[in-house]
Image 1 (cartoon, rainbow, N blue to C red):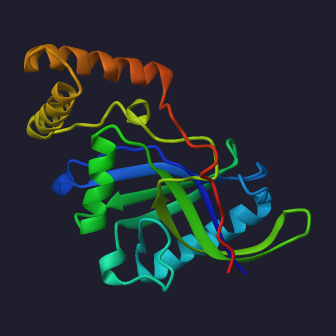
Image 2 (image 1 turned 135 degrees about the vertical axis):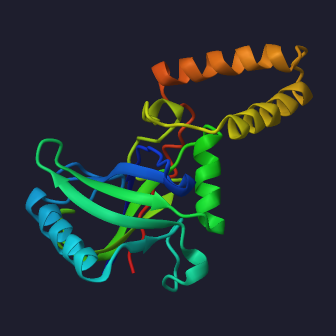
Length: 222
């Protein structure tokens, strides 16, 4: 039985080679997912340790976007999973990953920098009790998705303070949004829109992402 669960991410970036670094919680032990499954803390701790041992022996594990149905191929790679850790305090499975400059990796980075939302999903093989408790699970990888099973999404308010976006990239984002705003009826010039956009960023940090589709959460079992 294959189980894929989804949960949100937090993000940071690396100045090294311009790569974006992610740090996120992929799963919370004991908390029912959107499909009613629960992962006991001792199980999460166990498969986190096994996954880290795999990384220690063979190196980082590749992650994708969505869940490739026929297994991972080179063109599916979006991220590199560097480590996972079970946090005893939060009961969360924490993941450290790098977004790679592949086609899918660039899409992930663009979504985040443009203020979009994205989630995370663990993919593996396991067994589930009739009451929804997962009794066995082998973690194969962690993928990035748009429809997590939990009600949490990453947005601009989740960006770490250490995030540094190159001025050229931010200018391009603002100018693109400005053109879209003009088409929608915005009457000010680019400088006016910069002020509006800056205010929106500040508000998003306070209020969090909006517009989540609570009916979008799902799980795949094969």
